[in-house]
Length: 33
Image (cartoon, rainbow, N blue to C red; front, side, top):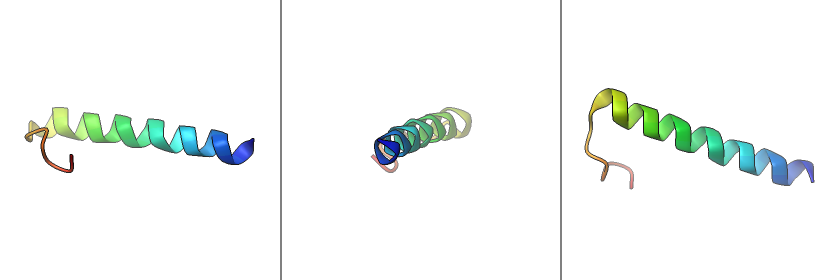
């Protein structure tokens, strides 16, 4: 159970950071896609 929650949290954070970095840097969405 703990491992599953950690995985979900990790994905959530990764997606948020990736989206924010793209928005703030105005870089093309294809970067790292």
